[in-house]
Length: 256
Ligand code: ZN
Ligand code: FE
Image 1 (cartoon, rainbow, N blue to C red):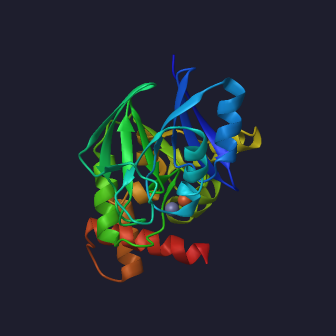
Image 2: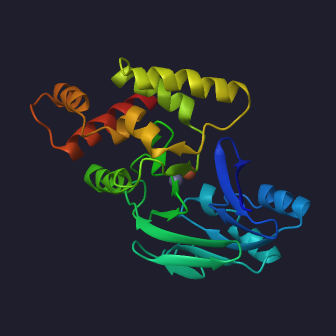
Image 3: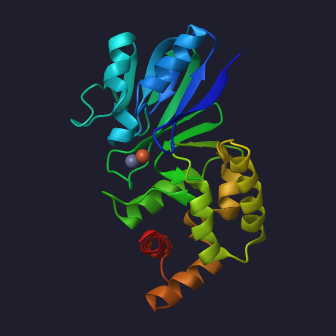
């Protein structure tokens, strides 16, 4: 019997934790304390850490966890994550003996160049690539790079559950309403996710089907998004990556 839960950390991070009542695997432990508290209270040993990218809010807890647990650390080959014991890249497969889990590594650059996502058992641990109704800022990659990463995610089954690393969904919905406010699926999602947050519950994991229907950053192939980008760019027929780039630029301006 496997349990998957998002451990809250900092303001809005989630440290996704999967365990079988004996051993656990955690994704992107930016802070060791909430992980240690959770594992100690349940007598769980940490078997492995998966890391999506080099940002501190995803890696800051690795050293503290390694001091306490003899665990493997899977992550991109990047000198900014020196604690990685098993470097991974897109196309790799990871098999963990306990909890018995298997992950396919996807290269998902854009937010950072080293960003990878982990796909296993119908779940995608996508770090800061996709958020509920949003996507990560392009700190290192280009719009074309991120659009290619999002296209790879769009190719996964609709039922795939997206385990994102931040609870940004409500503010992302506020932005999405400014570019896609007549989309009934988005309006419905706004009500659903506001109710979840009001009840103190996470809006995640989301499903790829819901993101396809409501997330403007996954809708850059839609004619309505292309028309919006054409108006903003002031030229007809922008390519899909340019549509994505225009929506990302609009969000960056909206964020201020
Ligand atoms: Zn990040
Ligand atoms: Fe982050």
